[in-house]
Image (cartoon, helix red, strand yellow):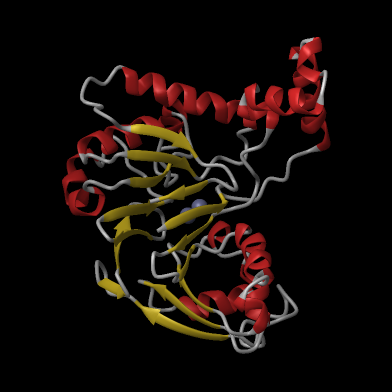
Amino acid sequence: MKIKFWGVRGSIPTPISGAIVEDKIRAALSMAKPGDISSPEAVESYIRTLPFSVRSTYGGNSTCIEVVTDTSDEIIIDAGSGIRNLGRELMKGDFGKGRGLGYIFLTHTHWDHIQGVPFFLPFYIKGNCFNIFSPFDDIKERLDYQQVPTHFPVTLDYMPAEKKFYRLEHEEEFVLNNTRIINKRMPHPGGAFGYRLEENGKVFVYTTDCEFNIDHIDLIDTYREFFLNADVAVFDTQYTFEESIDKMDYGHSSASIAIDIAVKFNIKRLILFHHDPDYNDIKLDNVLANARTYMSFNRHVGKLRVDIAHEGLEIDL
Ligand SMILES: [Zn+2]
Ligand SMILES: [Zn+2]
């Protein structure tokens, strides 16, 4: 399966400001030596040497992940503002011709996970068909509510693509060709669900909006089957460890607890995700660096690899 990140931010979309772009240019120019900018090729290779926070940005769109299975099924997990750009990309293919078939899995309906729906262009094309899954039994009503005329001029029903809603039982196994998809309820205010996707021996776990802290550690074994041996796990690490203590019960975790869980359940690659809207790119560079330092103190870490999500990140599993 192929995984692509279209939105990685939690809580609210955070467009980058002009002042921050200037800061990046200033930083890049101040670090450059004459040879670094002597030709277009030199500039290209110099850019690759810069820290991620200087040469790029982690992105401001709220959560949306695309998974294309080995059987070419289009799966979308969460529909934050990132789904808008995904929709624009999908319009170049069958979805632009009204022949698209997609599967959308929603973790929950906090705004940052559904706010892109009204701007998802394939929903405006007659002939497209989307199967929408969630363990919540009123998911259609929740999406309708987002688009009542006082909030948005186009209702969900007026968007002409066919939308079929399915309620998943808790921990139900849903099979789509060779892919098994299992949901798991996560500790989060109002409830949220993680998804585990298994296809051809590869395992991808997506669990955003989950608060695991010292109070939950006794319960962690109830998540064993869900996390066990994941090749890639995307995990809510909105806060630093210190903030996670200050913000106990806000519903989010830190990188250190994510690493502890990854080690315990033999996860091979952990992706830090659901970045706090107040964290700029430099801070997110530091979140990753601190996570890797924390990992280096754990002698049971094995071959665990830790990365941080950015818009456009692609993983081939
Ligand atoms: Zn969220
Ligand atoms: Zn939430």
